[in-house]
Image 1 (tube, rainbow, N blue to C red):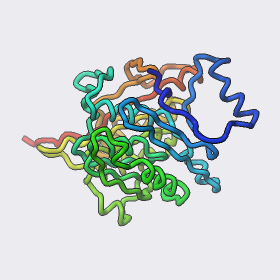
Image 2 (image 1 turned 135 degrees about the vertical axis):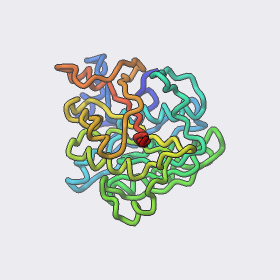
Image 3 (image 1 turned 120 degrees about the vertical axis):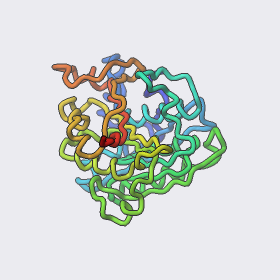
Image 4 (image 1 turned 180 degrees about the vertical axis):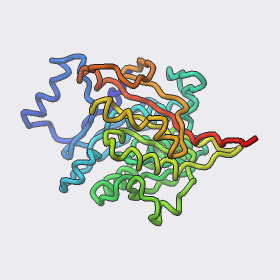
Length: 304
């Protein structure tokens, strides 16, 4: 089943000429994939056969230019993919993910504390809250427009009747600017989370270092009982050159992180190895693909 098949627009019929053109692109160009979903006039319904009822996802209507530049007023395919992984891992569904030691079951959130950075619509966080996580914190840039939409989505969907397990994790929303680690929120939550979700946050190369810092700050420290991981998913729509530096080994080492698994997956579930450079990539083709990364804290060196 195609990644985007779970999403449908909710709201008034489209009337703008550009909307008609957009909706017809799949007929004109059958290989073209929509990688951003929704607008201020239309909410989204996320329907999974494994959830008792659809989730209803509101989108923000940013009135400030700085808020619009965040692009958090869309649901992106990276969030759809991580939501599907969390569902498959937590419910032990058959999902073809096999990268060495990594399988679908590795995305089980049962009994874990979870944090989302740059959440946008919070779909992966909502799935975690409904599928057995013990505690979920949803964050995005501290813009009241963005945070109000996140609170609306949590209030509408973080309900027992939406959970196939009849469980619900406490879920809160808070502002967080990547790399700002002296705020009351950051100091109160240092090293608290088993899982950190990062979806489509890699298109700003100038923020990679700050994002590394936040991931490392919030992940639990390594211990015999801790296997903390960050799940990072991002599309290639802005170009591989802009986002690949996030996975540069030296930069990760400086933050105390390392890659456990890294691969590419398209909207139909086809997987391939991650590569640093694929040469000239067609725009329509690269929109179909996402990178999936699993990060962990670096192994402690043992001095002998």
